[in-house]
Length: 209
Image (cartoon, rainbow, N blue to C red; front, side):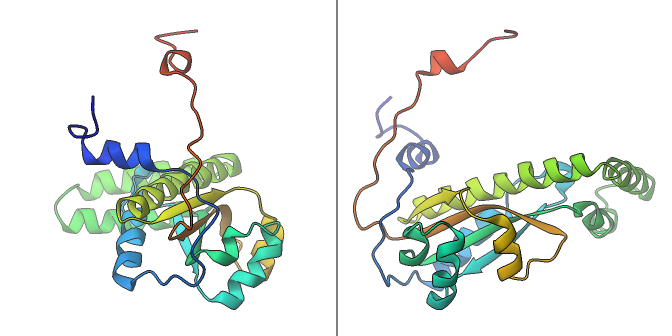
């Protein structure tokens, strides 16, 4: 299938690659930033709990403070902004508000609402469930963010390599949230290196190993 007939979304996915070299000082219009962040916020999540907060770091001095915490990865300082994707360890606390709105809208009954909230709070008695859910669901938002940026002509780099404890301390992150990924966003100074992928036949196992 040629790019001419591939759906635009598929083309964006194929064109997205990690970029570590950005045009220094490039200012992304606020309208585009809002569009990118809204796409991140529109990500799916288990029980619709929306297990994320986005710490947007666009002040140059703050990016410089982040630089050593991110092991001096130059894209942190050179990009237009960096987004820290934070996973919510207490996302179950969102359930009441979310489902109250669904009841008011007529999308579910009060009985179903109460049952769901009970199930969610029961599941969150497990610290492992809370942490796994925070990491998994906030990652959906991260991917949405990167694809939206690419669709608007910008580039990104997801970074898992940073000192999370120092990040939490330096940026006063509440205990409720855990940093999962840093994402630099900006205008590429040079084309990204298109990393290879295993052939699809090597990645797919049908029905069972």
